[in-house]
Each structure stands twice: as structure tokens, then as C-alpha cells.
Image 1 (cartoon, rainbow, N blue to C red):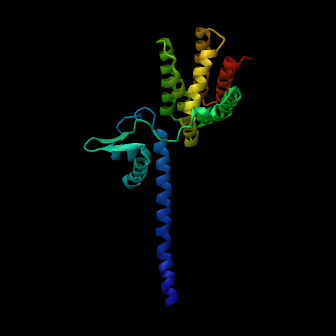
Image 2 (cartoon, rainbow, N blue to C red):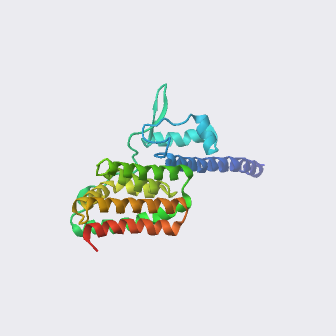
Length: 247
């Protein structure tokens, strides 16, 4: 009887544990899906998130599972609740701690950093071509347009340049690419600014070249041509090395 009782208890507990594990895995997936949405159109900084019913329907999950993922995002400081108004995206998404610009100590470090970006962002662009959604494609296009508009208005467009590269990283289906871009943002800004201040070509020629390179990356991702996207991103970043150091 004791053996039978134990067997019955074990059989009853097993599906419960399995269901709990399945719900945790589903919660993890919803969390990842929401991370991918943050920063895209409708989910930018300070944007109000859709209501729970609309968001759960969009993600195809129950509201309890959605709440589990939202609570995790709140705990991480990515979203916040404004009483009586709803849930909003934070101003700055704390995806990774920035690394000090002082880590670039000399010219060799700067060149090594730019070469690292070729490998990392080339892979991100390739994956983005395979994984991007229509919303993410729209976000990439808007970032490219904002970059060009900023240049036309006489801005150095450093922030818009960084935003374009981050949009590509966000679209690649792996949040660690975007986290790496966030962590390395200070060096990226520094290297872009340095390239623009020391480039040996005229400003107009250099800006035209950069705009064409961004457009080539965007077009390859839109065509979902992974090989061309990788080549276009690597050509763009190696063009930056050439502009800074010469051929």
C-alpha cells in the first residue's frame, strides 16, 4: 500500500512539474520577444506599451504568462508603470554597462576596435537579413533616413550613425548583439568622431560614401540576402578604417 501510494503521488506530481517548466520556458520566450520589440516603432523610449489584452494577443500567449515577462522587464528597469496611465518604456534601456572610452589607449587600439566591429557587425547584419521582422526593417530604414537628414542639416550625425548600427543589431534575433553594441557605444562614438575629424577626403565626398554604404546594408537586409548584408556591413566598416588610416 505504501508503494502504491508513493507511485500515485509521483504520477500526480509529474505533469504539474512539467506544466510549470513549460510555463517558465514560455515566459522566457515572451521575455525575449518583448526585448526584441523594445526600441522598434511603437516601443521606443517613453512609448506607452499596448494594454495586456492587445499585447498578449500580439504575442499569442495568456495574460498570466505575459505578466511574468513584464515583471521581469520591470525588475530590470527596462519598463515602468505610471499609475493610472499604463506601462512605459524607460528613457535608456539598461542592456549592458558601457565600457570606458579610456580602454582605447592608442592608435593600435582604435584600429583593433574597428576591425572587431567588422567581424561582430558583419555577423549581426547577416543574421538580421535572415531574422528581421517587417517592424525591424522599418526601424532600420527610419534610422538610415534620420542619419541622412541629420547630415543634410549640418549635424555630425554621430548619434544617428550609432542608432543605425544598433537597429541592425536589434534585428538579428539575438539580444546579445544589441547588448554588445550598447556596451561599446562610447568607443563607437569616439571612433566615429575621430574618423570624421581626421578623414583626408572632403566632407561631402565622405558623407556621400557613408550614406551609400548604409543604404547597401539596408537593401541587403531588406532582400534577406545574408551574404550580401555581411559583405555590405564589412565594406562599410572597412571603409571607415580606410577613411581614418588610409588604404
